Amino acid sequence: MIIQVLVDNEYSWIVPFAKKLVDECIKNGHKAVLLHKHNEVMQGDILCLLSCEKLFRKLELNKHNLVVHESALPKGKGWSPLTWQVLEGATEIPVTLFEAAKEVDAGLIYNQKSIKLGGHELVNELRCMQGNATVELIIDFVWNFPNNVGKEQEGTSTYYRKRVAEDSRIDITKSIESQFNLLQIVDNDKYPAFFEYNGFRYKIAISKIEDQ
Image (cartoon, rainbow, N blue to C red):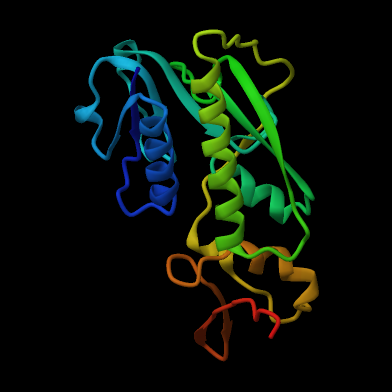
């Protein structure tokens, strides 16, 4: 099969996992390629849309257009679902493989697995778990092709908004423990935790000290 993987931000954290997916597909005898521009997508069998920042419109080019979303769709549509659920204190995050449709996050569901959290993971660990689950779901789809059967989404849709820099603000009047969920999901470089004190803004960087 011709399998294309589109990540429209070439600096995205998911790129190494997209490369892993491409390599696995090639090992299994398929023609696979990683793309970063929407206009590079050609006719083929499977297009995987991973962490795309813009909507891909030409769904007719491929037989299947696969998306992975970290929620139990139709609940948790929208932006950064894993991040929001960590903030909510979730200990298990559903990861859903579904077909892209004209309406965002509304297509047929093919498969789902769960990420189990220990409550200690920081953003790089969360991304690793998310990326590996993404690769596993898509590889399973490829192995089962063309016998994959999708099902309609059931239930009431809920939506997460896009997070902004202000969402990483720490309240210095509250304990670290009460805000640890927020510290788990901040990116020390792109959207670091911060607080303001005496008219100045301070950045907080967090990292895990491994056992010696």
